[in-house]
Length: 234
Figure 1 (cartoon, rainbow, N blue to C red):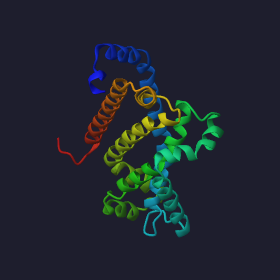
Figure 2: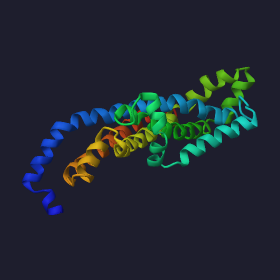
Figure 3: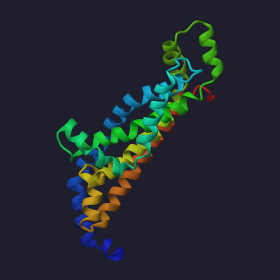
Figure 4: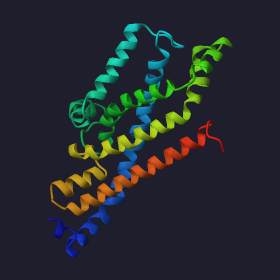
């Protein structure tokens, strides 16, 4: 199998397939990743803030039952494997976007899988904020919203960006798995050609491109986080 994989005629066929389908697949992967990350942040960031600020000794204490409920929902959604989650939310996907296949449809399970993960990452970042800074803001009469928006979030920006980079690369990996239920992008190419048609060279190139995209996102996130970290001496 591996000897044939790099045969001239096999490579020629693989390059023809890649030249025809790879530009659209790259666009679909980037489109799904960026949109899913955006919506997941919109949902996950407030939840992560509430998980920290809503504690009994936090700046915005919540009723115990509500905080426990948020924790249960976040833990429950995080514990469901993505492949199973995609199948479970098919009715919801069809209700929201009108179809269960395609790049747009894959965004729904991506968001549902990613926003609890992002909530935990935000929680972790906010817990790194120095408690003395929060106490100083409270002693000056700052309101809970002012402390959250002007102290906790700005102080945790480098950590938030680092964790957001982790979330982006995780979502990027999820987009590849979404090809199993008809999602577009590089995952669709890898599954359709590598699994169903035994064109392993095409699958190999799709995997390599996914790895390259992960490295690009990771490098950009690391550089941005380091540039915004005021603790780093220049």
